[in-house]
Image 1 (cartoon, one colour):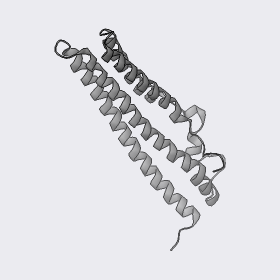
Image 2: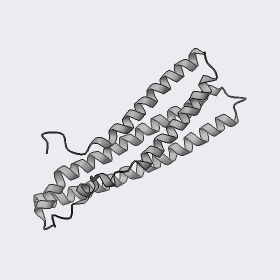
Image 3: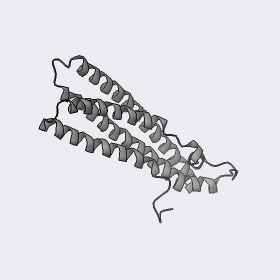
Image 4: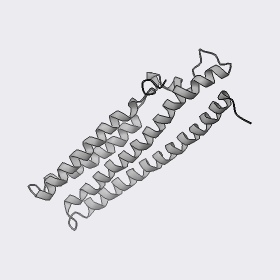
Amino acid sequence: MAMDRVELAKFLYTELRKEILEAQKIRTQLIGFKITFVSVGSGLIVANLQSVPIEILVVPALAAVFFDLLINGYSFSIKRIGVYIRCYLEPILNKGVVWPKSIPLWEDFMIQPIFKQRLSAIGNLGITILSVMIATFGLISTLPSIRSVSLLFIMALLTSYDVITFYKIPRIEKAPSGQN
């Protein structure tokens, strides 16, 4: 038996909410692993500076950047699903059920500016910037080595890309033009 539009929209809504929950779990695990890896890695390196080159501080800093890119990928996935639900499924649900117009459905409710928060993302980026700063100070102490200059350049490029990505992710709030 074929589903009608409203039943299909309800089914997709439920399945996509499950997908959001899974992506949130994975993102949370990545953040926890990032914090552990970066802090333990940096601590071990600093504790053993007499036996390891200071340039190795770049490893936890770059790892933090790469973790951020993975985390941002999951954040984008979550946002993309939310936009799809808000733009395509919620209008069908609004028409297919008796629902008061004064009470928005979830995604329409959450798009309101008062509910936007970036505290966890800023904290996540802050950990990365802190580890990059520590690595930068370590590399500056070994200048003018070509290896240090190269590592500083690579770290600056990747960190810049990380910061740009951080600011671009939250900006998808509606479906692409002509799609809604």
